[in-house]
Length: 87
Image (tube, rainbow, N blue to C red):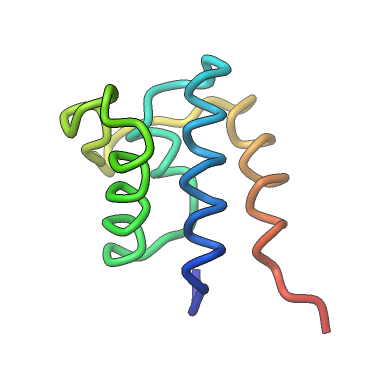
């Protein structure tokens, strides 16, 4: 993901929490499904923890080896499209 605004990162954080609440996987896998660089991923984690401290920092740690199911990939395509700029 290229340059994104703080608002877009906040939307991503809320989308991650929503997907977690819907049972689409753990937070780390959900965050990992977005095309975020390390700095952006850290910002999203911090936003999630500030909004949902009950999740704890252990549940939002990212591991690049986590697999994403095909159903999650389809969902990610839709969520990711909100960050695409149209020209």
